[in-house]
Length: 389
Image (spheres, rainbow, N blue to C red):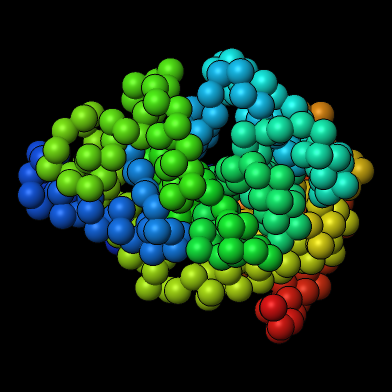
């Protein structure tokens, strides 16, 4: 790749050369038949990735817009929403729902831990919720939700499952055709953005609704939105020569190429690759005395939140590392200054991550701490010899 830096934050992520090349093509009119064909191919590729028989919406916007789009088209003002939160981005659904007059209940985990499923069951038993939100991989904590536990529990109580896949889609399984214990136990909505595991620059909001979620939209009749109303976008998703709002033409060029790369690699291979990346990064950083916030059993395949050993100044560490061409992110909320976050997803390669491990070790040594770089790199390599199920 021609990227000059190793952009290893939890998103945006490194962009492949072929995606850059696609994006710099001449801008066509948004109703041009050539562009309409590209747009439709992008939509169909997204359906294939998520294995949905419903509808997919790919529009100009961010992951936050996708969150809003998912909620406003399924839950009405005055209806109840249960938010399952593993961190900062799970909590974001609280204010979002409140902005639309939705009644919110929350089940929050300790940061770095998985949610208490018995508490979720208790909430679902005591209240009638229209929907439940799950953040698949919380970008603040690096904790991945256990869909095998949560989806059947939620569906048993008759609520819609809204999955925030912003830091997971394209790297962790999100199969909307999968049944979790019964034919009706499926994920109803998946929302994401273009800039994380899919590996395209920021700029596109992506939302998929299955038939159950689409029926929920029909039951609402009107929604308090215009741009976010899927009924306004559905004719364009079926026939992109129609017009509602001007799409980000060159972003669609890049997204189509990004989706080609995703599907060409194959979803199962991507799931395994990302699991290997996550385990390799975390195990090698442990050699430096750096502890992942999330235990391995609940850690996300796409990013890790790493606690500093004593004696590391966050700003100095990340600044020194950036001078070596490796960009990582600071931690959020109460972990600010106490940890950093590193992304290992999308178009990121094994070689990039190995270089990052080496540069992190060099930075620690420069800051006066001990770091066995050779051992860390050995541990990194050894992690790829472990069978991933």
